[in-house]
Image (cartoon, rainbow, N blue to C red; front, side):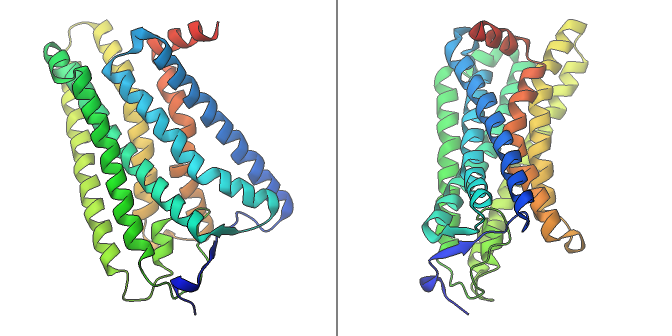
Length: 304
């Protein structure tokens, strides 16, 4: 038995104890990480370079790419380092930093996806008021609010989590420091304060999810009433990538945290955690570039 004051490091869960599989894990994560860096970096550079893309939709997409880069850079490099050098260690301070940045980036991304659904709703359902409702100053204020809410969530959850006494050792059953896994190390009755904060966060995220669903119900109703087939195609081309990103992000996250106990196992938890923390930052640039002709045209001009 130990307490938090005597813990100097945590032990992360390895993907395998076999050296060959550890090197395979390193190579796979390296490929995914490089793909995320390349894809998100190209989106950021293209939007910043092409003045035709200086619109609210692409401004929010640039923020999403920044958050994706930060999220995957928070978890993947340390896991790759552990696999390469056959270790499980992460310092206490390093674990705190991982929790702060991961909660900040993931919560900010969810708030940003909610904001992007509002942007699509205004663009399609109220196009005549688009410049008024989503001017440059309004978009800047919305982006600042998104990042500020993420910082607030991260500080509250991190302060509550690491203020708890840890009585169950220092082995974290995840490949990165995650709050639910750290709570399992706390004393039996001391985690209720953080549990109430998590419940509040879940309720808040559920309200955002309902807002996204209602926005897209209104969007699809408006699109189906459009007389022009070209207009419907253009509307779907701008909405479907965002809807795909929201579905991937929320679907994997909800399954990870709300799956029934009989479906829980170390191997399944590892796979699901990769799906919601590693795959989306690498896939999002591909999703947004497949059906977006403006972005593809600007990207080809930038490359050539």
